[in-house]
Image (cartoon, rainbow, N blue to C red):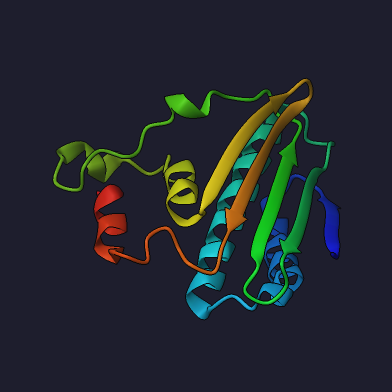
Length: 155
């Protein structure tokens, strides 16, 4: 099993680099185009959140690990580790419903709901020096049965 391990500066300009490397490292899983797009989305959101968490520790790198269990048709694992202060993921709510007037002013806060929607599994571990987000992407999406439910969940 090959494991990609990288450390990047806590700057948004590196999000695309991490996304490309994770997609390359996930190649043995032979994910469909749809699941590759899901992988890109969850990685982008997790790394963006890590960059934001690093505002107090801008000189510390963000660390990313990616590996595939099971080869073709296997499971992709991605861990994003930051050195931020941490947060309580259960306190993160999604945006107001699309028809609510407050939705127009709601510009942020979709990252964690999107990760939860498009990853088969996600966990948030608060450590003594930051947070580790572990995401699992399987060939079958958690939203494959009813894609409209995913759109409705975001409002």
